Image 1 (tube, rainbow, N blue to C red):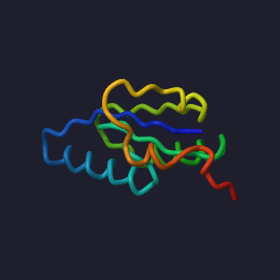
Image 2 (image 1 turned 180 degrees about the horizontal axis):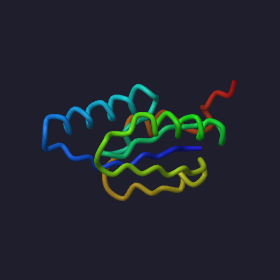
Image 3 (image 1 turned 180 degrees about the vertical axis):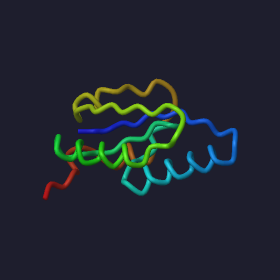
Image 4 (image 1 turned 30 degrees about the vertical axis):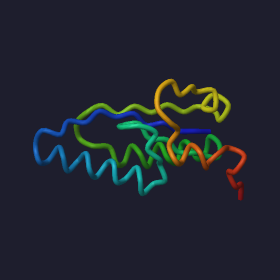
Length: 102
């Protein structure tokens, strides 16, 4: 499964910029990869992992702005079409078949 996080955060004041940086840093430290600006995704192993990471995400939300989460299967994610541009480095090297299950 994939968890996709979409966000639009205000960055006018110094406190808002700091909240943006802390949230983005949390996403990167928690294993999310940037798909495009303000869209981050992470591979998860089942519904239990989705619930775990949803709780982690809720605990690290910024105080203002808009944050959305979409969970899709690997088949649904693989069906996404890239219309303009090139795949990112992570998209070229990470596939669902390479996900190690422990």
